[in-house]
Amino acid sequence: MTASMPDYPSALPASGRSADELLNDIEAGRTGDLDWQSGRAFSLVYNAADPDLEHLQHGVADLFLHDNALNPMAYPSLRAMETSIIAMAADLFGTDARAGALTSGGTESIFCAVQVAREHARKVMAIPEPTIVVPHTAHPAFDKAAKYLDIEIIRVAVDPDGRADADTLADAMDERTAMVVGSAPCYPYGVMDPITDIAALAADAGILCHVDACLGGWLLPFWEANGETVTPWTFAVDGVTSMSADIHKYGYGYKGASVVLYRDRSLLKNQFFSFDDWPGGFYGSATPAGTRPAPPIAGAWATLVHLGSEGLVAKAADVLAATRRFVSFVDKTDGLGLVRRPDMSVVLFSATDPSTNPALAAELHAGGWKVDVQQEGLHLMMSPGHLAVLPDFEGAIVLALAAVSASPAAPQDGANEPARYADRAI
Ligand SMILES: *Cc1c(COP(=O)(O)O)cnc(C)c1O
Image 1 (cartoon, rainbow, N blue to C red):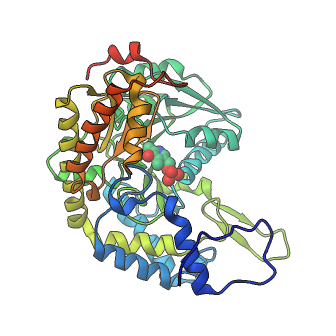
Image 2: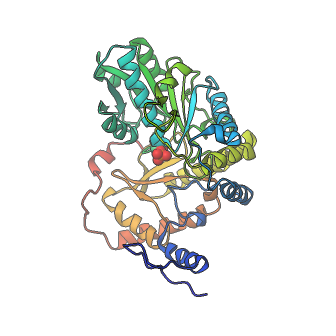
Image 3: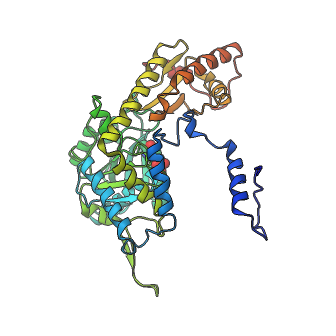
């Protein structure tokens, strides 16, 4: 059967199409989509490069395709997996096995933590209009949560190395502050905020402290097991009261799985919702979602149990090797520099003339390499699947640099800021 691009109707077609034919066309329609399996993509998908895991994930997704985790009582197996995921996370990050919830992703985990902070501020701290204070590098999910929850968010500048500064955060705090945030690490630069200092600040002020470990939560423990020094960031740090950690990033689950954890279950309970004043019976939930897809729960559980800590240590070894290799490539290549020196697997690098970054990215994109263009440089996140392609990628960058310097592009809108870049230690 020859596949063609599907027609995407704007109204429901009168007669349906055959499943096989449609599948073929849908596949043909994906030609422009991000091809993560090639290893040429550096964001959105965390490529475990693991055929066994892939097989398991397809199997488990298929098994649970139609199930609904809205009512865990109807699915003892899903409930057991969910409880087990939270317990495994709590064990890894050092909190009570019952003080967490599984969510659909980092944004939802952060939403929950901000909602808990608002509730806690109003109920326990007598702050009717709470605010949260976050570093400039904190993920936009905090602003999104603040918008939906109608609370004020204050963003403060970070240090030249890209890390939050506890004193700067302290200066922005006042009697309305309900929570302060640090990232482990932040997405833009991959640097660790000084969680010990930030959490101490929160403890002194009697407020909450959230650690956004969406990116690092399922990698940092194994990074450390590979001999890297990791500054403290878990519940072992006094004053940390909540944490978000995405299984669908470096936990290698497929999309739709993250955990939000608290220092104790009483904080978590602020998330719980129950209602019975309608004719539909008792309704309760632990997170914002109602009907919940079962495949991400089963997939996350199966992935973590399949890999185990030894598997995650081995994956982290590949991520570490890829990161080291690429960082040293950037360091030794004329015309390139690191924008910040990362603590984990994120590399933000720039052409020495940052105004050429968009042209450099365009050259790479033309060769099928997908890197994100940010304000200050080109952004990559390393996965186990990248180790094998880095020699090709580095070759492509050298060629792209040559092509760009041979035909300098006109400065583009939103181009980088050479003066600021020049100030930076790289
Ligand atoms: C990815 C990420 C988030 C948001 O998670 P989603 O799963 O995309 O909703 C939040 N914080 C950090 C540091 C992240 O890397």
